[in-house]
Image (cartoon, rainbow, N blue to C red; front, side):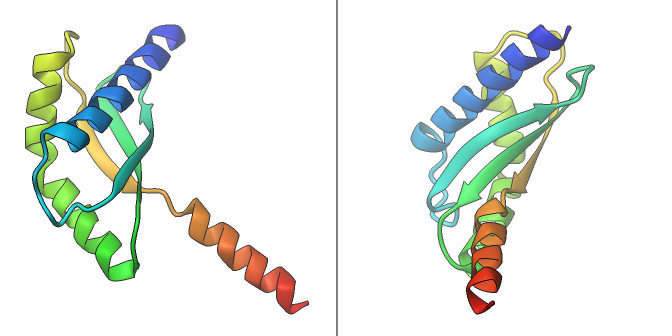
Length: 110
């Protein structure tokens, strides 16, 4: 079961990346990179981890636009991926780069 979950996660990551590249025309989204997908064991829920280029305001604006487009993304995934249940998707922002930058700032101050 775990192997299947990993395959589905990779497939969803690839397809969502293509959807952002080709199908989504919302200018609020900007530069979004899909870093990964985390799914539950039962394949019913998927967190799509994204990195968004820009300042704090641009990131918040893009994240709102991503959440607005969730239904359309799920619809397109349903047309491209054949699985029994299409998972509920949620977009989450990856802030690891900001945390790393903050740690570097603190270390430089020492």
